[in-house]
Length: 586
Image 1 (cartoon, rainbow, N blue to C red):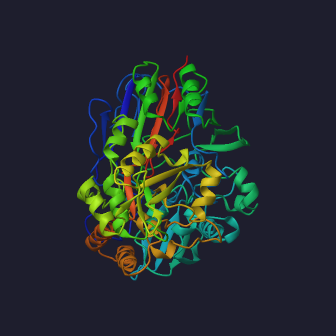
Image 2: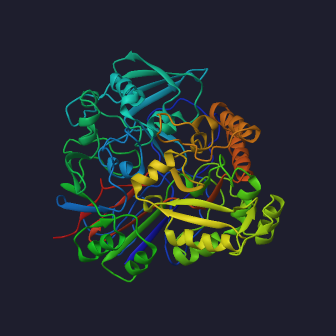
Image 3: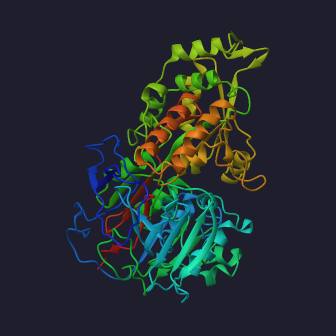
């Protein structure tokens, strides 16, 4: 068996922050490392993950993107078993979460592509141009693209997609936040649309490079949300044939496909005939299905299963970090006890994150020391802020007035026990075993941590209702602008009543206003250096307020049969794509 871990290289952008671009090539720079022999801490700037893997027991040819042995074979069915929850809708505009991104990457494509150097390249777009005041963006799309329902891509497509995203009935969360500054769309000509913005948005092209803001057939969107959820219509290498809810999705090859990502080394249709996308949430059953050959690929690979796979020559594993907000515990600052920054810091200083990751994740993940993942541009690691210091934790709690202890050893103040409830659900990647170790560490300083395990739906309801003291979260996004979503006070309220709120710490007041100002500067400035400085300063302010306890980078963790060739993690979100995948079974 061969295991691969991806790290990225990229260079800071030189010159103006926003500039005119047209079709131009660009080959992502990749570093491929064997998982157990070398595990570098990914501190390089970068956004995207792109690698074409050979899974036949030999390393890939990174320069050509082709396997080093064997000719690709056309045909066959690949069975993919996901450990993520079943999407509520196959159109990622509705809601907008990772389970949707995983499957939608196979049949939907965005206007732009973001490479490993953080450069934007056209995908379904042909060219783009900003106005001098950066309040208007002209996008010209390719004139030879047809959706799988026969609809032609044109300027109207952009208008109808943005209208659909911004329609409250669509129930969008991720996509609507991405285009919230788009006030209107104007037709310039048949294939050029002009986006009018309420203010400059340095992340706009990054937003439009996400699968959560894809380009779909306007004819299909007109059917309405219900039908579009069942069978979105895009331009991707596969198309949705059927969805048997709570069981599987069937995708079939788009035989007319000719719009691969700029990083692709070939064009033309996919090799596979179809993909069966199954839902197997139980980790043990999913891995057993892979071992037996019942399925070909699984995700959310557990650390213990990765070690078993390492000893099995019939299996391969691919692990890559995702960009955005790291897997973390967010503190609810709107209620006691975490309305006091001293208590937030004390908890952070008390828990032994390193020990938990070592024992539970078996050294397969590195600890994060920033709210931004280690592959996200401008991430600012501050280990001194998050290092364990039990003496300081105790001193902080004493200073905050939690000086007495009850018979169980927990601190009390005015008769109230120092305690906090942390929610847990499998889909947010923080196992109960990790929280149990945090629980034991917290008890050492007299802090009672209560773990509430919930099904995904109940977890979501409680998250939306702010019914937690601590909550494990992550937010996948190919930009430091993820902080404009997760830490701006404007996102404390939900965009729909009783719904999702991107800001889950709830901090308000002068400290929060300082963070808002830095994030706003980063969002609108026309100067690259000022943008970087503002995002670094914003991270320092967020870290100094102990609004989150960073744990580790989000990861895409795949394991698959050794006769499956050509699996890639595609920029910019590190989602798997099966465009180049073929089965060596003759």
